[in-house]
Image 1 (spheres, rainbow, N blue to C red):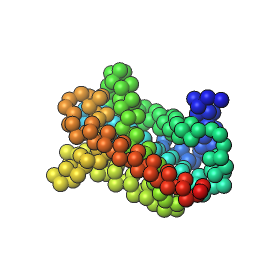
Image 2: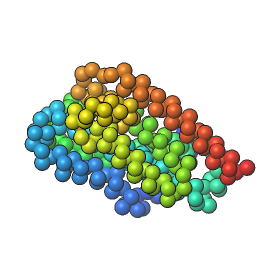
Image 3: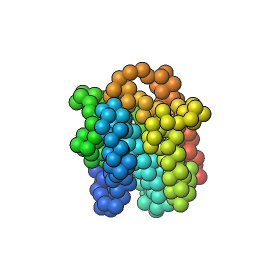
Image 4: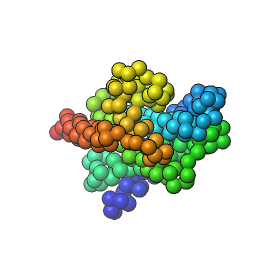
Length: 250
């Protein structure tokens, strides 16, 4: 069986396993939509302004993907490492890349599902709007911006046991969400926080998607920052993976 076929099969059963526990989808699907519904829609100064409302929907979309990526990779990998099934899977002749790609596909699909109610609320209850081609490009840019979060989740999953990973993921996503301008627009930040925020992957993903959807200027730091986070976190993830493999399978 080819790697592509193995990837699709593994992704299929990963989705089946996740959907058997519907409550596991609430954090990804419901929480960002409720945040938009409770904190953005009632504020007519934001919800009634097309530019502000669109940026708010984009911020919550990035937040939704970030939470899904951190929890799925961080907690998923940490949990699997504590199960007897994981060592068995590593003994099979299937390439490890197929399992990683399958995890990315299944996580990406669930993240896309989570964006549906969020975009629906934004379209129906706020003045947010964008041309269809910009929306499509925005979804692609969200996928690109989510890579640092996926890699961060992998690092957490291979570095920490399950109980510690839960606490770290919660701290990381809350800190990145607030300091990255996903809860409040960066224009409301003091100067020092705005300067720090520009170096965070959440702020860079937000600014990148807003630029793709609404146009305007894009700071070089945003592009190079996303690429830099990808390189650094990918390197760290490989180191932690090999360390885990060396400890448990030598």
